[in-house]
Image 1 (spheres, rainbow over the protein chains, first blue to last red):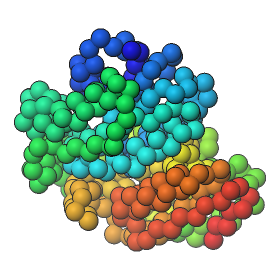
Image 2 (tube, rainbow over the protein chains, first blue to last red):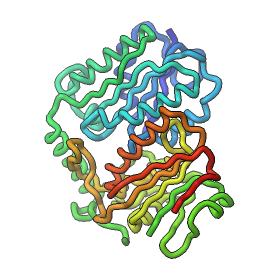
Image 3 (cartoon, rainbow over the protein chains, first blue to last red):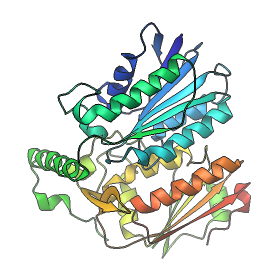
Length: 194
Length: 164
């Protein structure tokens, strides 16, 4: 089976999207996986970060450029991550991609919305364990569908980790970066001239 | 101030949008500003303003002064056009990195007290599922922009636009 991976993150190899694609690839043994749009392929998997409730403009531009000429009937799958805790906040972006599929002549496979994207690479446990337990289950289900070129309802995952703690941990990380950048806490809240 | 972000050609903008000056300011999305690269400088290094040195930096300055924010965009798949989205993606500095809970979900704390009236004017050949998606997108954007209220209008052609 030939599968195209599209990493729609502007951060490319450093991105959470890249991490998610690598984690998915481990669950797709024996498949021929290529990066980018070049066909032919049986399935195409998009990974991207949520930008203002939608698709990053860079990927959106690529989608518009590829509305024609893709292998008809190939199945499309999506792995969308956001910085908020709730994976469900990726639902609209997944639907936008699904609407694009209808115009591009692709069959819709399945979307997975992953919450707390920024945390995935900072916890030192493998996918499927501890806070990444629900992510592991979602990737298993997605991989199973891809391997059979099947479809399924969207899956939304939040980390197996309390939301309140996630918010605190993310804010601590922000504060550390602020200090490293030579700024004070109050500088962060500055307002442009209103 | 009423900020209108649009992707219309100059001539169409002059014909279809309220005249600029005083309380009305346009931001033309085309040619596109450089895309957001997800560096978070607008939160942690150069708070409130995007660090990419192009006219996209002005967008947050304008949004900070707006009490009405209107988006005029060709509808792509139930979302915005790539040019309009490139501008909107640069808005992140309009909110703070800190978190709060809104309607039981995690969101960012607003940087400004002013709450905008958010209006979407979406034009083009829009399917029924795309309309539904656009309504959900506008509702989600309204939460993240801390809008006072939001409205969505659809048009088959840009010529039919009625932007007040």
